[in-house]
Amino acid sequence: MIGRGAFRGPAIPGPGARATALVGALTLERGASLLAGAALMLAFPRPGLGWLAWIVLVPGMMLIRSAPTVREAALRGWWFGAGFLLAALYWTLPNIGPGLLLVAIVFGLPWAVWGALIRWLVPAHPLAALIVVPSAWLVIELLRSWPRLGGPWALLGASQWRYPPMLGLAALGGVWLISFAIVAFNTALLLALVAPRLRMRLAAPALAILLAGPASYMLADEPPADRTLTVALVQPGVVHDRDERLAASERITAALPPADLIVWGESSVGHDLARRPDLTARLSALTPRGHLLVNEDARDATGRISKSSILISPAGIQDRYVKTRLVPFGEYIPFRDAIGWLSRISAAAAENRVPGTGAGVMQTGDVTIGPLVCFESAFPDLGRAVVERGAQVIVYQSATSTFQESWAPPQHAALAAVRAAETGRPTVQAALTGVSAAFDARGRRLAWMDTDRRGSLVTTLRVPPQSSRTPYDRFGDHIPYLAVAVTLTAVLAGARRRFR
Image (cartoon, rainbow, N blue to C red; front, side, top):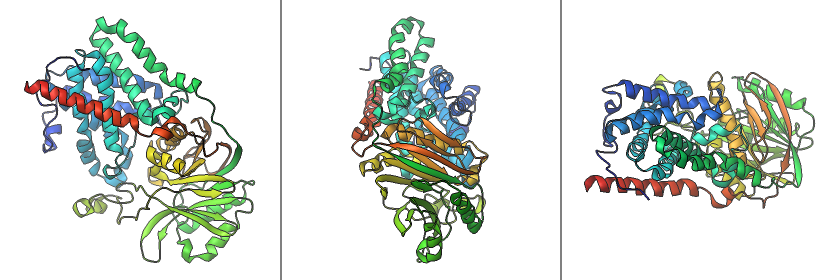
Protein backbone atom coordinates (compact mmCIF):
# COMPACT_ATOMS: atom_id res chain seq x y z
CA MET A 1 0.00 0.00 0.00
CA ILE A 2 1.25 3.48 -0.87
CA GLY A 3 1.73 5.61 2.20
CA ARG A 4 0.67 9.19 2.68
CA GLY A 5 2.74 11.81 0.97
CA ALA A 6 2.62 14.80 -1.32
CA PHE A 7 2.65 14.29 -5.07
CA ARG A 8 3.34 17.88 -6.07
CA GLY A 9 3.24 19.27 -9.57
CA PRO A 10 2.34 17.55 -12.83
CA ALA A 11 3.89 14.12 -13.26
CA ILE A 12 4.75 14.57 -16.94
CA PRO A 13 4.68 17.33 -19.50
CA GLY A 14 1.44 17.57 -21.46
CA PRO A 15 1.10 15.00 -24.26
CA GLY A 16 0.95 17.78 -26.82
CA ALA A 17 4.21 19.38 -25.70
CA ARG A 18 6.60 20.07 -28.52
CA ALA A 19 9.97 18.37 -28.81
CA THR A 20 11.59 21.54 -27.54
CA ALA A 21 10.22 20.69 -24.11
CA LEU A 22 12.86 18.00 -24.00
CA VAL A 23 15.78 19.74 -25.61
CA GLY A 24 15.11 23.25 -24.39
CA ALA A 25 16.74 24.70 -21.29
CA LEU A 26 19.46 22.06 -21.20
CA THR A 27 20.96 21.72 -17.76
CA LEU A 28 23.91 19.77 -16.49
CA GLU A 29 21.59 17.38 -14.64
CA ARG A 30 19.47 16.69 -17.72
CA GLY A 31 22.56 16.09 -19.83
CA ALA A 32 23.86 13.73 -17.18
CA SER A 33 20.50 11.94 -17.22
CA LEU A 34 20.86 11.47 -20.99
CA LEU A 35 24.29 9.90 -20.52
CA ALA A 36 23.05 7.75 -17.64
CA GLY A 37 20.36 6.31 -19.90
CA ALA A 38 22.84 5.64 -22.68
CA ALA A 39 25.19 3.86 -20.24
CA LEU A 40 22.59 1.15 -19.78
CA MET A 41 23.56 -0.31 -23.17
CA LEU A 42 26.91 -1.39 -21.72
CA ALA A 43 25.00 -4.31 -20.19
CA PHE A 44 24.08 -5.59 -23.66
CA PRO A 45 26.29 -7.07 -26.40
CA ARG A 46 28.84 -6.13 -27.66
CA PRO A 47 30.17 -4.79 -24.37
CA GLY A 48 28.28 -7.65 -22.74
CA LEU A 49 28.60 -6.41 -19.17
CA GLY A 50 25.38 -8.09 -18.12
CA TRP A 51 26.24 -7.86 -14.42
CA LEU A 52 26.30 -4.07 -14.79
CA ALA A 53 22.53 -4.02 -15.31
CA TRP A 54 22.09 -4.69 -11.58
CA ILE A 55 23.70 -1.35 -10.63
CA VAL A 56 23.79 0.84 -13.75
CA LEU A 57 20.36 2.40 -13.20
CA VAL A 58 21.38 3.90 -9.87
CA PRO A 59 23.22 7.02 -11.18
CA GLY A 60 20.26 8.03 -13.33
CA MET A 61 17.83 7.32 -10.51
CA MET A 62 19.94 9.44 -8.15
CA LEU A 63 19.79 12.35 -10.60
CA ILE A 64 16.02 11.96 -10.85
CA ARG A 65 15.58 11.66 -7.08
CA SER A 66 17.60 14.84 -6.47
CA ALA A 67 15.32 16.94 -8.69
CA PRO A 68 13.77 19.86 -6.78
CA THR A 69 10.26 19.15 -8.09
CA VAL A 70 8.28 16.26 -9.51
CA ARG A 71 8.09 18.09 -12.83
CA GLU A 72 11.87 18.36 -13.03
CA ALA A 73 12.17 14.68 -12.07
CA ALA A 74 9.81 13.84 -14.94
CA LEU A 75 11.94 15.84 -17.37
CA ARG A 76 15.11 14.09 -16.20
CA GLY A 77 13.34 10.77 -16.60
CA TRP A 78 12.42 11.80 -20.15
CA TRP A 79 16.04 12.64 -20.89
CA PHE A 80 17.10 9.30 -19.38
CA GLY A 81 14.70 7.41 -21.64
CA ALA A 82 15.76 9.36 -24.72
CA GLY A 83 19.42 8.63 -23.99
CA PHE A 84 18.72 4.94 -23.59
CA LEU A 85 16.82 4.76 -26.88
CA LEU A 86 19.47 6.71 -28.77
CA ALA A 87 22.11 4.24 -27.59
CA ALA A 88 19.90 1.18 -28.06
CA LEU A 89 18.89 2.08 -31.61
CA TYR A 90 21.93 3.96 -32.93
CA TRP A 91 22.51 1.20 -35.49
CA THR A 92 19.21 2.08 -37.21
CA LEU A 93 20.66 5.36 -38.53
CA PRO A 94 21.20 3.96 -42.06
CA ASN A 95 17.50 3.08 -42.24
CA ILE A 96 15.84 5.80 -40.21
CA GLY A 97 18.25 8.72 -40.51
CA PRO A 98 17.11 11.81 -38.59
CA GLY A 99 13.98 9.92 -37.59
CA LEU A 100 16.04 8.36 -34.78
CA LEU A 101 15.97 11.63 -32.83
CA LEU A 102 12.20 11.79 -33.21
CA VAL A 103 11.89 8.19 -32.01
CA ALA A 104 14.05 8.93 -28.96
CA ILE A 105 12.04 12.03 -28.05
CA VAL A 106 8.61 10.48 -28.53
CA PHE A 107 9.26 7.04 -27.07
CA GLY A 108 11.43 8.42 -24.28
CA LEU A 109 8.40 10.28 -22.91
CA PRO A 110 7.00 7.36 -20.81
CA TRP A 111 10.16 7.48 -18.70
CA ALA A 112 8.86 10.84 -17.46
CA VAL A 113 6.21 8.96 -15.47
CA TRP A 114 8.92 6.63 -14.17
CA GLY A 115 10.96 9.65 -13.08
CA ALA A 116 7.99 11.27 -11.35
CA LEU A 117 7.26 8.08 -9.40
CA ILE A 118 10.88 7.84 -8.25
CA ARG A 119 10.78 11.43 -7.01
CA TRP A 120 7.55 10.82 -5.12
CA LEU A 121 8.26 7.41 -3.59
CA VAL A 122 12.00 7.45 -2.79
CA PRO A 123 12.69 7.37 0.11
CA ALA A 124 9.33 8.34 1.63
CA HIS A 125 7.58 5.07 0.73
CA PRO A 126 10.29 2.38 0.40
CA LEU A 127 8.04 -0.68 0.12
CA ALA A 128 5.87 1.00 -2.50
CA ALA A 129 9.01 2.09 -4.39
CA LEU A 130 10.29 -1.51 -4.57
CA ILE A 131 7.06 -2.52 -6.30
CA VAL A 132 5.92 0.55 -8.22
CA VAL A 133 9.23 1.72 -9.75
CA PRO A 134 9.98 -1.63 -11.48
CA SER A 135 6.30 -1.95 -12.43
CA ALA A 136 6.42 1.42 -14.18
CA TRP A 137 9.53 0.27 -16.05
CA LEU A 138 7.65 -2.84 -17.23
CA VAL A 139 4.77 -0.70 -18.47
CA ILE A 140 7.28 1.18 -20.64
CA GLU A 141 8.65 -2.10 -21.99
CA LEU A 142 5.15 -3.33 -22.68
CA LEU A 143 4.31 -0.16 -24.60
CA ARG A 144 7.50 -0.46 -26.64
CA SER A 145 6.64 -4.08 -27.40
CA TRP A 146 3.42 -3.20 -29.18
CA PRO A 147 4.15 -4.03 -32.85
CA ARG A 148 2.50 -0.85 -34.11
CA LEU A 149 4.94 1.17 -32.01
CA GLY A 150 8.02 -0.56 -33.34
CA GLY A 151 8.83 -3.55 -31.16
CA PRO A 152 10.63 -4.68 -28.01
CA TRP A 153 14.30 -4.11 -28.77
CA ALA A 154 16.70 -4.04 -25.79
CA LEU A 155 14.28 -5.09 -23.07
CA LEU A 156 16.30 -4.87 -19.87
CA GLY A 157 15.90 -8.54 -18.97
CA ALA A 158 17.57 -9.58 -22.23
CA SER A 159 20.87 -8.26 -20.85
CA GLN A 160 21.10 -11.46 -18.75
CA TRP A 161 21.27 -13.82 -21.75
CA ARG A 162 24.79 -14.99 -20.86
CA TYR A 163 23.76 -16.11 -17.37
CA PRO A 164 21.48 -19.18 -17.51
CA PRO A 165 20.78 -19.04 -13.74
CA MET A 166 19.37 -15.54 -14.16
CA LEU A 167 17.30 -16.82 -17.09
CA GLY A 168 15.53 -19.06 -14.59
CA LEU A 169 13.13 -16.16 -14.05
CA ALA A 170 12.28 -16.15 -17.77
CA ALA A 171 10.76 -19.62 -17.51
CA LEU A 172 8.48 -18.29 -14.74
CA GLY A 173 7.44 -14.90 -16.07
CA GLY A 174 9.27 -14.26 -19.31
CA VAL A 175 11.85 -11.58 -19.93
CA TRP A 176 9.49 -9.27 -18.02
CA LEU A 177 10.24 -10.91 -14.68
CA ILE A 178 13.98 -10.48 -15.20
CA SER A 179 13.48 -6.80 -16.02
CA PHE A 180 11.35 -6.38 -12.90
CA ALA A 181 14.02 -7.99 -10.70
CA ILE A 182 16.80 -5.81 -12.15
CA VAL A 183 14.91 -2.55 -11.62
CA ALA A 184 13.77 -3.64 -8.15
CA PHE A 185 17.36 -4.36 -7.12
CA ASN A 186 18.55 -1.00 -8.46
CA THR A 187 15.71 0.63 -6.52
CA ALA A 188 16.82 -1.11 -3.34
CA LEU A 189 20.35 0.21 -3.87
CA LEU A 190 18.99 3.71 -4.42
CA LEU A 191 16.98 3.53 -1.21
CA ALA A 192 20.03 2.33 0.70
CA LEU A 193 22.07 5.27 -0.61
CA VAL A 194 19.56 8.03 0.09
CA ALA A 195 18.17 6.60 3.34
CA PRO A 196 20.92 4.87 5.36
CA ARG A 197 18.42 4.09 8.13
CA LEU A 198 16.73 1.65 5.71
CA ARG A 199 19.82 -0.38 4.87
CA MET A 200 19.25 -3.19 7.34
CA ARG A 201 15.59 -3.46 6.41
CA LEU A 202 16.49 -3.57 2.71
CA ALA A 203 19.16 -6.27 2.98
CA ALA A 204 16.76 -9.22 3.01
CA PRO A 205 14.51 -8.15 0.10
CA ALA A 206 17.53 -7.10 -1.98
CA LEU A 207 19.20 -10.47 -1.45
CA ALA A 208 15.95 -12.27 -2.26
CA ILE A 209 15.63 -10.33 -5.54
CA LEU A 210 19.22 -11.11 -6.52
CA LEU A 211 18.94 -14.83 -5.73
CA ALA A 212 15.46 -15.39 -7.17
CA GLY A 213 16.76 -16.31 -10.62
CA PRO A 214 19.46 -18.77 -9.52
CA ALA A 215 17.06 -20.35 -7.02
CA SER A 216 14.36 -20.91 -9.62
CA TYR A 217 16.98 -22.26 -12.02
CA MET A 218 18.30 -24.79 -9.50
CA LEU A 219 14.85 -25.88 -8.34
CA ALA A 220 13.47 -26.40 -11.85
CA ASP A 221 13.77 -29.82 -13.42
CA GLU A 222 15.98 -30.27 -16.44
CA PRO A 223 13.72 -30.08 -19.54
CA PRO A 224 12.79 -33.58 -20.72
CA ALA A 225 13.99 -34.83 -24.11
CA ASP A 226 12.86 -37.90 -26.00
CA ARG A 227 14.85 -37.46 -29.21
CA THR A 228 17.64 -35.40 -30.81
CA LEU A 229 17.77 -33.22 -33.90
CA THR A 230 20.98 -32.44 -35.82
CA VAL A 231 20.81 -28.92 -37.22
CA ALA A 232 23.26 -27.23 -39.60
CA LEU A 233 23.30 -23.42 -39.85
CA VAL A 234 24.69 -21.91 -43.05
CA GLN A 235 26.39 -18.48 -42.97
CA PRO A 236 27.78 -17.31 -46.35
CA GLY A 237 28.40 -13.70 -45.30
CA VAL A 238 27.64 -10.40 -47.00
CA VAL A 239 26.95 -11.25 -50.66
CA HIS A 240 24.76 -8.63 -52.31
CA ASP A 241 24.14 -10.32 -55.65
CA ARG A 242 21.22 -12.73 -55.19
CA ASP A 243 22.60 -15.40 -57.53
CA GLU A 244 26.07 -15.33 -55.98
CA ARG A 245 24.47 -15.48 -52.52
CA LEU A 246 22.45 -18.53 -53.50
CA ALA A 247 25.51 -20.22 -55.01
CA ALA A 248 27.59 -19.53 -51.88
CA SER A 249 24.93 -21.13 -49.67
CA GLU A 250 24.75 -24.13 -52.02
CA ARG A 251 28.51 -24.66 -51.85
CA ILE A 252 28.55 -24.58 -48.06
CA THR A 253 25.55 -26.90 -47.86
CA ALA A 254 27.01 -29.41 -50.28
CA ALA A 255 30.06 -29.79 -48.01
CA LEU A 256 28.02 -30.47 -44.86
CA PRO A 257 27.83 -33.82 -43.09
CA PRO A 258 24.33 -35.36 -42.97
CA ALA A 259 21.89 -33.30 -40.90
CA ASP A 260 18.21 -33.59 -40.06
CA LEU A 261 17.62 -29.90 -40.77
CA ILE A 262 19.72 -27.38 -42.70
CA VAL A 263 18.84 -23.73 -42.12
CA TRP A 264 19.75 -20.83 -44.38
CA GLY A 265 19.50 -17.20 -43.31
CA GLU A 266 16.96 -14.52 -44.12
CA SER A 267 16.78 -13.45 -47.79
CA SER A 268 18.98 -16.39 -48.79
CA VAL A 269 16.85 -16.96 -51.93
CA GLY A 270 16.13 -13.88 -54.03
CA HIS A 271 13.78 -15.57 -56.51
CA ASP A 272 10.12 -16.53 -56.36
CA LEU A 273 10.38 -20.32 -56.07
CA ALA A 274 6.77 -20.72 -57.13
CA ARG A 275 7.87 -19.56 -60.58
CA ARG A 276 11.30 -21.20 -60.57
CA PRO A 277 10.87 -24.99 -60.49
CA ASP A 278 14.48 -25.32 -61.65
CA LEU A 279 15.73 -23.64 -58.45
CA THR A 280 13.39 -25.73 -56.32
CA ALA A 281 14.86 -28.86 -57.88
CA ARG A 282 18.41 -27.65 -57.16
CA LEU A 283 17.52 -26.99 -53.53
CA SER A 284 15.74 -30.34 -53.17
CA ALA A 285 18.90 -32.09 -54.32
CA LEU A 286 20.69 -30.67 -51.25
CA THR A 287 18.44 -32.61 -48.85
CA PRO A 288 19.13 -36.33 -49.36
CA ARG A 289 18.58 -37.08 -45.67
CA GLY A 290 16.55 -34.31 -44.07
CA HIS A 291 15.03 -30.93 -44.83
CA LEU A 292 16.30 -27.54 -45.94
CA LEU A 293 14.75 -24.33 -44.59
CA VAL A 294 15.46 -21.39 -46.88
CA ASN A 295 14.15 -17.84 -46.80
CA GLU A 296 12.63 -16.27 -49.90
CA ASP A 297 12.74 -12.50 -50.41
CA ALA A 298 11.27 -11.81 -53.85
CA ARG A 299 8.27 -10.45 -55.72
CA ASP A 300 5.49 -12.90 -56.36
CA ALA A 301 3.39 -13.13 -59.50
CA THR A 302 1.21 -10.23 -58.32
CA GLY A 303 4.20 -7.93 -57.73
CA ARG A 304 4.01 -8.01 -53.94
CA ILE A 305 7.10 -8.59 -51.76
CA SER A 306 7.14 -10.74 -48.63
CA LYS A 307 9.74 -12.68 -46.68
CA SER A 308 8.92 -16.36 -46.42
CA SER A 309 10.47 -19.34 -44.65
CA ILE A 310 10.16 -22.27 -47.06
CA LEU A 311 10.73 -25.87 -45.99
CA ILE A 312 12.11 -28.04 -48.78
CA SER A 313 12.27 -31.83 -48.75
CA PRO A 314 13.64 -34.22 -51.40
CA ALA A 315 10.14 -34.09 -52.93
CA GLY A 316 10.13 -30.28 -53.26
CA ILE A 317 8.45 -27.45 -51.33
CA GLN A 318 6.73 -28.86 -48.25
CA ASP A 319 5.61 -25.79 -46.27
CA ARG A 320 5.77 -22.01 -46.11
CA TYR A 321 5.59 -19.32 -43.40
CA VAL A 322 5.35 -15.60 -44.23
CA LYS A 323 7.02 -13.16 -41.85
CA THR A 324 4.36 -11.51 -39.69
CA ARG A 325 6.17 -8.79 -37.71
CA LEU A 326 8.01 -6.47 -40.07
CA VAL A 327 10.92 -4.18 -39.18
CA PRO A 328 9.82 -0.54 -38.93
CA PHE A 329 11.56 1.57 -41.58
CA GLY A 330 13.61 -1.43 -42.74
CA GLU A 331 10.67 -3.34 -44.24
CA TYR A 332 7.90 -0.80 -44.01
CA ILE A 333 7.47 2.83 -43.01
CA PRO A 334 4.79 3.45 -40.37
CA PHE A 335 2.39 6.18 -41.45
CA ARG A 336 4.02 6.23 -44.88
CA ASP A 337 1.69 8.97 -46.12
CA ALA A 338 3.09 11.33 -43.48
CA ILE A 339 6.76 10.33 -43.15
CA GLY A 340 7.44 8.38 -46.33
CA TRP A 341 9.89 11.12 -47.30
CA LEU A 342 12.43 9.41 -45.04
CA SER A 343 13.04 6.88 -47.83
CA ARG A 344 14.46 9.71 -49.96
CA ILE A 345 17.14 10.70 -47.44
CA SER A 346 17.97 7.31 -45.88
CA ALA A 347 17.89 3.59 -46.61
CA ALA A 348 14.33 3.27 -45.26
CA ALA A 349 12.05 0.89 -47.14
CA ALA A 350 11.11 2.25 -50.56
CA GLU A 351 7.90 0.21 -50.38
CA ASN A 352 6.13 -1.78 -47.71
CA ARG A 353 6.52 -5.54 -47.65
CA VAL A 354 3.39 -7.59 -47.12
CA PRO A 355 3.15 -9.29 -43.69
CA GLY A 356 1.87 -12.78 -43.01
CA THR A 357 -1.20 -13.64 -41.00
CA GLY A 358 0.36 -15.26 -37.92
CA ALA A 359 2.78 -17.81 -36.55
CA GLY A 360 2.77 -21.41 -37.75
CA VAL A 361 4.72 -24.66 -37.45
CA MET A 362 6.33 -27.12 -39.85
CA GLN A 363 7.15 -30.80 -39.70
CA THR A 364 10.68 -32.07 -40.30
CA GLY A 365 10.74 -35.82 -39.77
CA ASP A 366 9.19 -36.52 -36.39
CA VAL A 367 10.08 -33.08 -34.97
CA THR A 368 7.85 -29.99 -35.19
CA ILE A 369 9.68 -26.71 -35.69
CA GLY A 370 8.44 -23.13 -35.27
CA PRO A 371 9.99 -20.92 -37.98
CA LEU A 372 10.24 -17.18 -37.32
CA VAL A 373 12.13 -14.51 -39.22
CA CYS A 374 14.75 -12.05 -37.96
CA PHE A 375 13.13 -9.24 -35.92
CA GLU A 376 10.46 -11.68 -34.74
CA SER A 377 12.94 -13.07 -32.21
CA ALA A 378 12.43 -9.87 -30.20
CA PHE A 379 8.77 -10.71 -29.49
CA PRO A 380 8.12 -13.04 -26.52
CA ASP A 381 4.55 -13.72 -27.63
CA LEU A 382 5.64 -15.22 -30.96
CA GLY A 383 7.84 -17.77 -29.21
CA ARG A 384 4.87 -18.78 -27.06
CA ALA A 385 2.62 -18.83 -30.13
CA VAL A 386 4.65 -21.45 -31.99
CA VAL A 387 4.97 -23.56 -28.82
CA GLU A 388 1.18 -23.47 -28.40
CA ARG A 389 0.94 -24.81 -31.95
CA GLY A 390 3.23 -27.70 -31.09
CA ALA A 391 6.76 -26.45 -31.89
CA GLN A 392 9.50 -28.47 -30.21
CA VAL A 393 12.34 -26.37 -31.66
CA ILE A 394 12.26 -22.64 -32.51
CA VAL A 395 14.15 -21.63 -35.65
CA TYR A 396 15.02 -18.03 -36.53
CA GLN A 397 16.35 -16.88 -39.90
CA SER A 398 18.14 -13.55 -39.95
CA ALA A 399 20.30 -11.18 -41.99
CA THR A 400 21.93 -8.06 -40.59
CA SER A 401 24.18 -7.05 -43.49
CA THR A 402 23.31 -3.35 -43.07
CA PHE A 403 24.45 -3.44 -39.43
CA GLN A 404 27.52 -5.70 -39.55
CA GLU A 405 29.90 -3.34 -37.78
CA SER A 406 27.41 -2.34 -35.10
CA TRP A 407 26.26 -3.94 -31.83
CA ALA A 408 23.02 -5.11 -33.45
CA PRO A 409 24.01 -8.64 -34.64
CA PRO A 410 25.13 -10.00 -31.24
CA GLN A 411 22.19 -8.31 -29.51
CA HIS A 412 19.90 -9.99 -32.01
CA ALA A 413 21.42 -13.45 -31.55
CA ALA A 414 21.30 -13.08 -27.76
CA LEU A 415 17.50 -12.86 -27.91
CA ALA A 416 17.32 -16.52 -28.93
CA ALA A 417 18.74 -17.49 -25.53
CA VAL A 418 15.95 -15.61 -23.76
CA ARG A 419 13.25 -17.15 -25.97
CA ALA A 420 14.70 -20.61 -25.28
CA ALA A 421 14.57 -20.08 -21.51
CA GLU A 422 11.05 -18.66 -21.69
CA THR A 423 9.59 -21.53 -23.68
CA GLY A 424 11.73 -24.48 -22.62
CA ARG A 425 12.57 -25.09 -26.28
CA PRO A 426 16.00 -25.36 -27.93
CA THR A 427 16.42 -22.40 -30.25
CA VAL A 428 18.67 -21.74 -33.22
CA GLN A 429 19.33 -18.71 -35.38
CA ALA A 430 20.82 -18.96 -38.86
CA ALA A 431 22.07 -15.55 -39.92
CA LEU A 432 23.06 -14.94 -43.50
CA THR A 433 25.79 -12.60 -42.31
CA GLY A 434 26.14 -13.59 -38.63
CA VAL A 435 25.63 -14.04 -35.77
CA SER A 436 24.41 -17.64 -36.10
CA ALA A 437 23.85 -19.38 -32.77
CA ALA A 438 22.21 -22.29 -30.96
CA PHE A 439 20.88 -22.57 -27.39
CA ASP A 440 19.45 -25.46 -25.44
CA ALA A 441 16.05 -25.52 -23.74
CA ARG A 442 17.36 -23.55 -20.72
CA GLY A 443 19.09 -20.85 -22.72
CA ARG A 444 22.59 -22.31 -22.40
CA ARG A 445 24.77 -21.53 -25.39
CA LEU A 446 25.65 -24.50 -27.58
CA ALA A 447 27.24 -22.78 -30.57
CA TRP A 448 28.09 -19.29 -31.80
CA MET A 449 29.40 -18.07 -35.17
CA ASP A 450 30.17 -14.34 -35.14
CA THR A 451 29.99 -11.89 -38.00
CA ASP A 452 33.65 -12.31 -38.95
CA ARG A 453 33.23 -16.01 -39.82
CA ARG A 454 31.88 -17.78 -42.90
CA GLY A 455 30.78 -21.36 -43.36
CA SER A 456 28.56 -23.62 -41.32
CA LEU A 457 27.72 -24.55 -37.77
CA VAL A 458 26.45 -28.02 -36.86
CA THR A 459 24.84 -28.75 -33.51
CA THR A 460 22.72 -31.50 -31.96
CA LEU A 461 19.65 -30.45 -30.00
CA ARG A 462 17.82 -32.39 -27.31
CA VAL A 463 14.18 -32.11 -28.33
CA PRO A 464 11.46 -31.95 -25.64
CA PRO A 465 8.03 -33.50 -26.11
CA GLN A 466 5.22 -31.24 -27.29
CA SER A 467 3.52 -31.58 -23.91
CA SER A 468 6.44 -29.96 -22.06
CA ARG A 469 5.54 -26.47 -20.82
CA THR A 470 7.20 -23.80 -18.71
CA PRO A 471 5.07 -21.63 -16.40
CA TYR A 472 5.54 -18.79 -18.88
CA ASP A 473 4.17 -21.01 -21.66
CA ARG A 474 1.09 -21.70 -19.56
CA PHE A 475 0.35 -18.29 -18.10
CA GLY A 476 1.84 -15.87 -20.60
CA ASP A 477 2.38 -12.18 -19.97
CA HIS A 478 0.77 -11.95 -16.54
CA ILE A 479 3.76 -10.08 -15.08
CA PRO A 480 3.56 -6.95 -17.28
CA TYR A 481 -0.22 -6.82 -16.98
CA LEU A 482 0.06 -6.89 -13.20
CA ALA A 483 2.63 -4.11 -13.56
CA VAL A 484 0.09 -2.06 -15.52
CA ALA A 485 -2.42 -2.43 -12.68
CA VAL A 486 0.17 -1.46 -10.05
CA THR A 487 1.37 1.56 -12.02
CA LEU A 488 -2.11 2.85 -12.75
CA THR A 489 -3.02 2.52 -9.08
CA ALA A 490 0.09 4.46 -8.07
CA VAL A 491 -0.48 7.22 -10.64
CA LEU A 492 -4.13 7.60 -9.62
CA ALA A 493 -3.17 7.68 -5.94
CA GLY A 494 -0.58 10.35 -6.64
CA ALA A 495 -3.00 12.43 -8.68
CA ARG A 496 -5.63 12.17 -5.93
CA ARG A 497 -3.18 13.37 -3.26
CA ARG A 498 -2.09 16.24 -5.46
CA PHE A 499 -5.63 17.51 -5.92
CA ARG A 500 -6.46 17.00 -2.24
